[in-house]
Image (cartoon, rainbow, N blue to C red; front, side):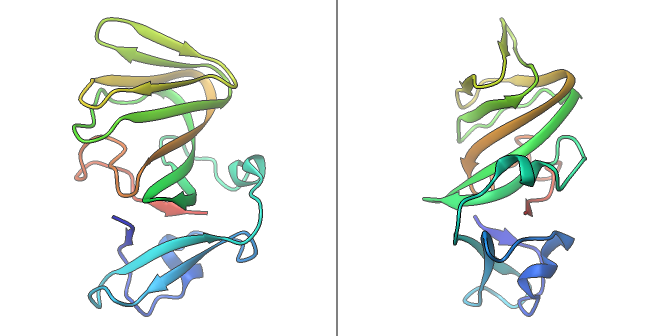
Length: 160
């Protein structure tokens, strides 16, 4: 589900108060949805520099969508400290470390990842990402997937 809670008349640059570079990945409003929501589709117009995108935000555990493909969001996130224990009943959880060391705690083991390493947590498996120092990640998941496994407690989807 690629939906931003915003009036349909909202200009793309105002969605969720986030900024975007129209020359790189520009949100497009899709008016076929009800008047109180706008469907956002990010269309690539040129390459994306991940470090430049990471420089645009400082908050932890609040992924930013930088691109979309085949119904999936490509997101960047910064983590520091432990996240909550959670699971995703309907989808696997993909983690690729760009910078730092990430520990993915599972109930029976801990997976440690460094830069350039990735791990996919299978659907339905409880896990808790933990970072002793700041970690930068690339995440890929179906659009609309709640980062906590529960839409009531999930971080809002933000586009950069």
